[in-house]
Length: 454
Image (cartoon, rainbow, N blue to C red; front, side, top):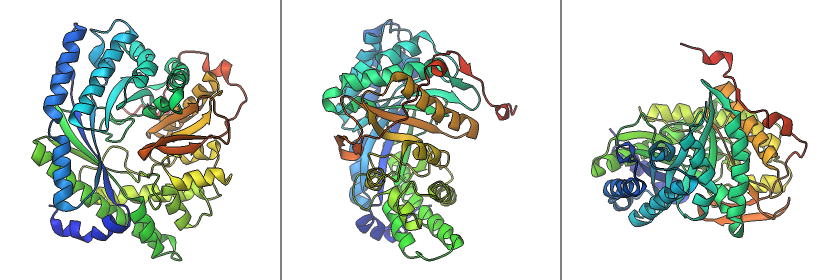
């Protein structure tokens, strides 16, 4: 049982070390909203979300006030819309109307993002899946709070290379549709391998089909807390280093457990999981890169970076699972470039390249996240980068993702500015050698041999 005394122990973390609950995410099933009539479908979706989430923001503020725990974001995730809109949507613009409904609901209840404008196409695409995917560039351009995610592969099914190739085109179109805002649409679009059903973090959150009608998932973050703890054992050996990270992760997760239980009770919604992810922000002192430097690297990207990140990710998970019976989502270290001032500095110093980031994603919790690349990067190159990341996830049986921003009109050395949690990023170079013949083959890369575990 989590109690206020455990929270009091973390007061210093909250006040001085940037500990926060990054998000309370209310998952809502829209399966009972399905209708062959588009107008009725949108009305059903609106009524379901507004009814379920009307008190979400107020409850979050109540918990903040009573316990002194910052809750940065209140969010909603919904059932993948490709599953909900298939009967009513006959062309991409029909799906765009649903995106507008979701955006209106998010603004009405006061959440900052709503996720689930999604399709699960790891094996094949239905007609509805393709229509939703084709609608994404316009949908993200005409909405402010809608996030989109597409699952392109899994360890059990392999990689849907037709969808990978299509997403190269879609990401480029999304960049062009939002070119007047540094291609912001791409910052709200992520592609996954092995996407989890219970992820509370955007842009990848959706309400999985194995979930119930409603669920509360909480994401906790505390890179500054971990860094501060490591400052106390700067010259210690690896055993003490690992124990320090585990103990700190335990305390952070207990805070998330308290908030999740309280939100669940007050909203009368089942508690799902706590996601303990060291998710950075652009704020100074809230950086995963700074943790890696405290471990002993001059900059992320230096030799030893992958080993240090593997150590960090593993110890965070070990500490988290001791603190809660329901740790889920992604739970580990995130390495988004634009959202981490230390990562930005490493790129600008020449220490961190796209290839090194790809190697780091083998051992972190997500993948190539919030990385700006030149606006003239080809669709095929983007598809090739996605395919590489999907392969890492498929073979290693882990979640990997890609959120690339081919910044329209920008070149290497320029900068994109998104503001808020999305931050800013230097435009990074990409390998310009071609992969057209590879990504245009079509079909599916088969699942690896170790996927057959029945």
